[in-house]
Image (tube, rainbow, N blue to C red; front, side, top):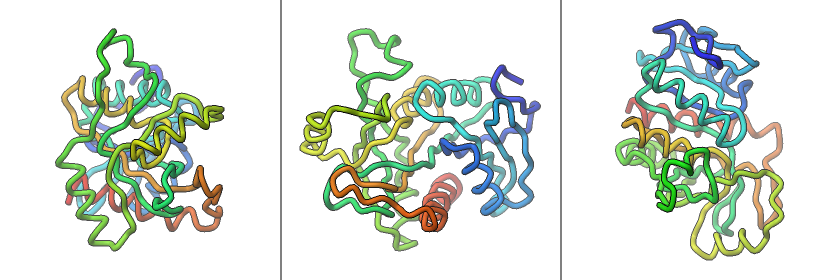
Length: 234
Protein backbone atom coordinates (compact mmCIF):
# COMPACT_ATOMS: atom_id res chain seq x y z
CA UNK A 1 0.00 0.00 0.00
CA UNK A 2 1.00 3.61 -0.59
CA UNK A 3 -0.44 6.90 0.72
CA UNK A 4 -2.63 7.09 -2.40
CA UNK A 5 -3.20 3.49 -3.52
CA UNK A 6 -4.74 0.93 -1.19
CA UNK A 7 -4.19 -2.12 -3.38
CA UNK A 8 -2.45 -5.09 -1.79
CA UNK A 9 0.75 -6.55 -3.28
CA UNK A 10 -0.07 -8.43 -6.46
CA UNK A 11 -3.42 -6.73 -7.04
CA UNK A 12 -2.08 -4.30 -9.67
CA UNK A 13 -1.27 -5.72 -13.10
CA UNK A 14 1.91 -4.88 -15.01
CA UNK A 15 -0.24 -3.15 -17.64
CA UNK A 16 -2.26 -0.16 -16.41
CA UNK A 17 -4.70 1.99 -18.37
CA UNK A 18 -5.12 5.43 -16.83
CA UNK A 19 -8.21 7.55 -17.51
CA UNK A 20 -8.37 10.86 -15.68
CA UNK A 21 -11.87 10.30 -14.33
CA UNK A 22 -12.14 7.48 -11.75
CA UNK A 23 -15.74 6.87 -12.81
CA UNK A 24 -14.53 6.34 -16.35
CA UNK A 25 -12.13 3.74 -14.93
CA UNK A 26 -15.15 1.97 -13.46
CA UNK A 27 -17.07 2.15 -16.74
CA UNK A 28 -14.12 0.91 -18.79
CA UNK A 29 -13.42 -1.97 -16.41
CA UNK A 30 -17.05 -3.10 -16.34
CA UNK A 31 -17.34 -2.75 -20.13
CA UNK A 32 -14.09 -4.30 -21.35
CA UNK A 33 -12.60 -6.50 -18.61
CA UNK A 34 -13.59 -9.98 -17.54
CA UNK A 35 -14.16 -10.37 -13.79
CA UNK A 36 -13.03 -6.86 -12.78
CA UNK A 37 -12.24 -6.47 -9.09
CA UNK A 38 -12.07 -3.13 -7.26
CA UNK A 39 -8.53 -2.88 -5.85
CA UNK A 40 -8.35 0.80 -4.91
CA UNK A 41 -10.77 3.50 -3.82
CA UNK A 42 -8.54 5.71 -1.66
CA UNK A 43 -9.67 9.33 -2.11
CA UNK A 44 -12.32 8.08 -4.51
CA UNK A 45 -9.70 7.13 -7.11
CA UNK A 46 -11.06 3.83 -8.37
CA UNK A 47 -8.88 1.07 -9.76
CA UNK A 48 -10.05 -2.28 -11.09
CA UNK A 49 -8.04 -5.33 -12.09
CA UNK A 50 -9.39 -7.95 -14.46
CA UNK A 51 -8.49 -9.63 -17.72
CA UNK A 52 -8.85 -8.78 -21.40
CA UNK A 53 -8.52 -11.71 -23.81
CA UNK A 54 -6.74 -13.60 -21.04
CA UNK A 55 -4.30 -10.78 -20.29
CA UNK A 56 -4.24 -9.24 -16.83
CA UNK A 57 -4.82 -5.48 -16.81
CA UNK A 58 -5.60 -2.75 -14.29
CA UNK A 59 -7.62 0.38 -15.07
CA UNK A 60 -6.67 3.09 -12.58
CA UNK A 61 -7.84 6.70 -12.46
CA UNK A 62 -5.15 9.36 -12.56
CA UNK A 63 -7.09 12.48 -11.59
CA UNK A 64 -6.84 15.75 -13.49
CA UNK A 65 -3.53 17.38 -14.30
CA UNK A 66 0.11 16.38 -14.28
CA UNK A 67 0.73 16.64 -10.51
CA UNK A 68 -2.04 14.13 -9.81
CA UNK A 69 -0.99 11.75 -12.57
CA UNK A 70 2.64 11.97 -11.45
CA UNK A 71 1.77 10.69 -7.99
CA UNK A 72 -0.14 7.67 -9.29
CA UNK A 73 2.30 6.84 -12.07
CA UNK A 74 5.29 6.93 -9.74
CA UNK A 75 3.59 4.74 -7.13
CA UNK A 76 2.26 2.27 -9.70
CA UNK A 77 5.74 1.84 -11.17
CA UNK A 78 7.87 1.92 -8.03
CA UNK A 79 5.63 0.17 -5.54
CA UNK A 80 3.49 -2.12 -7.71
CA UNK A 81 5.78 -3.01 -10.60
CA UNK A 82 3.76 -1.51 -13.45
CA UNK A 83 5.65 -1.87 -16.73
CA UNK A 84 3.20 -0.41 -19.26
CA UNK A 85 1.08 2.68 -18.62
CA UNK A 86 -1.39 3.97 -21.21
CA UNK A 87 -3.32 7.16 -20.71
CA UNK A 88 -6.87 7.01 -22.09
CA UNK A 89 -8.61 10.36 -21.96
CA UNK A 90 -10.24 13.27 -23.70
CA UNK A 91 -8.59 16.16 -25.52
CA UNK A 92 -9.44 19.38 -27.30
CA UNK A 93 -8.59 19.61 -31.01
CA UNK A 94 -6.35 22.47 -32.16
CA UNK A 95 -6.34 21.90 -35.95
CA UNK A 96 -9.19 22.12 -38.46
CA UNK A 97 -8.73 18.60 -39.83
CA UNK A 98 -8.88 16.98 -36.37
CA UNK A 99 -12.56 16.34 -35.71
CA UNK A 100 -14.67 15.64 -32.66
CA UNK A 101 -14.80 11.84 -32.05
CA UNK A 102 -11.44 11.32 -33.77
CA UNK A 103 -8.67 9.52 -31.89
CA UNK A 104 -5.22 11.04 -31.38
CA UNK A 105 -2.20 8.87 -30.63
CA UNK A 106 0.51 11.05 -29.13
CA UNK A 107 4.06 10.60 -30.40
CA UNK A 108 5.33 13.50 -28.28
CA UNK A 109 3.91 16.00 -25.83
CA UNK A 110 5.04 19.60 -25.48
CA UNK A 111 4.46 21.48 -22.25
CA UNK A 112 5.38 24.63 -20.36
CA UNK A 113 5.87 22.89 -17.05
CA UNK A 114 5.60 19.47 -15.42
CA UNK A 115 6.28 18.19 -11.91
CA UNK A 116 9.50 16.70 -13.36
CA UNK A 117 10.83 20.04 -14.60
CA UNK A 118 13.20 20.37 -11.65
CA UNK A 119 15.03 17.20 -12.66
CA UNK A 120 16.30 18.74 -15.88
CA UNK A 121 17.25 22.28 -14.78
CA UNK A 122 18.24 24.08 -18.00
CA UNK A 123 17.56 21.05 -20.23
CA UNK A 124 14.36 21.00 -22.31
CA UNK A 125 13.55 17.29 -22.23
CA UNK A 126 11.36 15.99 -25.10
CA UNK A 127 8.82 13.49 -23.72
CA UNK A 128 7.85 10.82 -26.23
CA UNK A 129 5.83 7.62 -26.43
CA UNK A 130 7.14 4.08 -26.50
CA UNK A 131 7.44 3.26 -30.20
CA UNK A 132 6.27 -0.35 -29.92
CA UNK A 133 3.06 0.71 -28.19
CA UNK A 134 2.54 3.53 -30.66
CA UNK A 135 3.03 1.27 -33.67
CA UNK A 136 0.53 -1.28 -32.40
CA UNK A 137 -1.99 1.42 -31.49
CA UNK A 138 -1.84 2.86 -34.99
CA UNK A 139 -2.33 -0.61 -36.49
CA UNK A 140 -5.29 -1.27 -34.18
CA UNK A 141 -6.92 2.05 -35.06
CA UNK A 142 -6.52 1.37 -38.78
CA UNK A 143 -7.97 -2.11 -38.41
CA UNK A 144 -11.02 -0.66 -36.64
CA UNK A 145 -11.42 2.07 -39.24
CA UNK A 146 -11.31 4.73 -36.54
CA UNK A 147 -10.38 8.23 -37.79
CA UNK A 148 -6.97 8.66 -36.17
CA UNK A 149 -4.19 11.25 -36.05
CA UNK A 150 -0.62 10.58 -34.94
CA UNK A 151 1.75 13.34 -33.90
CA UNK A 152 2.59 15.91 -31.26
CA UNK A 153 0.17 17.14 -28.61
CA UNK A 154 0.26 19.80 -25.88
CA UNK A 155 -0.05 18.98 -22.18
CA UNK A 156 -1.29 22.10 -20.42
CA UNK A 157 -0.95 22.72 -16.71
CA UNK A 158 -4.09 24.90 -16.70
CA UNK A 159 -7.63 24.12 -17.81
CA UNK A 160 -8.96 27.67 -18.14
CA UNK A 161 -6.33 29.01 -20.51
CA UNK A 162 -6.31 32.69 -21.46
CA UNK A 163 -3.56 32.48 -24.08
CA UNK A 164 -5.16 32.48 -27.55
CA UNK A 165 -1.74 33.45 -28.93
CA UNK A 166 -0.32 30.21 -27.55
CA UNK A 167 -3.08 28.18 -29.20
CA UNK A 168 -2.32 29.85 -32.52
CA UNK A 169 1.42 29.25 -32.19
CA UNK A 170 0.98 25.58 -31.30
CA UNK A 171 -1.42 25.06 -34.20
CA UNK A 172 1.10 26.69 -36.52
CA UNK A 173 3.59 24.03 -35.44
CA UNK A 174 1.18 21.17 -36.12
CA UNK A 175 0.18 20.35 -32.55
CA UNK A 176 -2.93 18.20 -32.83
CA UNK A 177 -4.70 18.73 -29.52
CA UNK A 178 -4.44 19.77 -25.89
CA UNK A 179 -4.86 17.69 -22.74
CA UNK A 180 -3.34 17.81 -19.25
CA UNK A 181 -1.36 14.66 -18.39
CA UNK A 182 0.66 12.98 -21.14
CA UNK A 183 3.92 14.95 -20.90
CA UNK A 184 4.44 13.96 -17.28
CA UNK A 185 3.42 10.35 -17.94
CA UNK A 186 6.01 10.07 -20.71
CA UNK A 187 8.68 11.67 -18.53
CA UNK A 188 8.03 9.46 -15.50
CA UNK A 189 8.01 6.38 -17.72
CA UNK A 190 11.32 7.34 -19.33
CA UNK A 191 12.94 7.97 -15.96
CA UNK A 192 11.88 4.55 -14.70
CA UNK A 193 12.55 2.55 -17.87
CA UNK A 194 8.94 1.53 -18.56
CA UNK A 195 6.59 1.95 -21.53
CA UNK A 196 4.01 4.70 -21.91
CA UNK A 197 1.50 5.90 -24.48
CA UNK A 198 -1.44 8.33 -24.64
CA UNK A 199 -4.50 7.44 -26.71
CA UNK A 200 -6.99 10.30 -26.70
CA UNK A 201 -10.53 10.94 -27.90
CA UNK A 202 -11.34 14.42 -29.21
CA UNK A 203 -14.27 15.55 -27.08
CA UNK A 204 -14.28 19.23 -28.07
CA UNK A 205 -12.74 21.61 -30.58
CA UNK A 206 -10.90 24.82 -29.71
CA UNK A 207 -11.52 26.35 -33.15
CA UNK A 208 -15.08 25.32 -34.04
CA UNK A 209 -16.25 25.06 -30.39
CA UNK A 210 -18.03 21.81 -31.23
CA UNK A 211 -18.34 19.43 -28.30
CA UNK A 212 -19.15 15.75 -28.11
CA UNK A 213 -22.70 15.23 -26.76
CA UNK A 214 -22.83 13.36 -23.48
CA UNK A 215 -24.87 10.51 -24.97
CA UNK A 216 -22.17 9.85 -27.59
CA UNK A 217 -19.18 9.85 -25.25
CA UNK A 218 -19.23 6.21 -24.18
CA UNK A 219 -19.33 4.89 -27.75
CA UNK A 220 -16.53 7.18 -28.86
CA UNK A 221 -14.42 6.53 -25.79
CA UNK A 222 -14.90 2.80 -26.31
CA UNK A 223 -12.85 2.94 -29.51
CA UNK A 224 -10.01 4.56 -27.55
CA UNK A 225 -10.05 1.88 -24.85
CA UNK A 226 -10.01 -0.95 -27.39
CA UNK A 227 -7.10 0.66 -29.25
CA UNK A 228 -5.18 1.00 -25.98
CA UNK A 229 -5.77 -2.65 -25.08
CA UNK A 230 -4.72 -3.82 -28.53
CA UNK A 231 -1.58 -1.70 -28.23
CA UNK A 232 -0.70 -3.29 -24.92
CA UNK A 233 -1.43 -6.91 -25.84
CA UNK A 234 -1.92 -7.14 -29.60
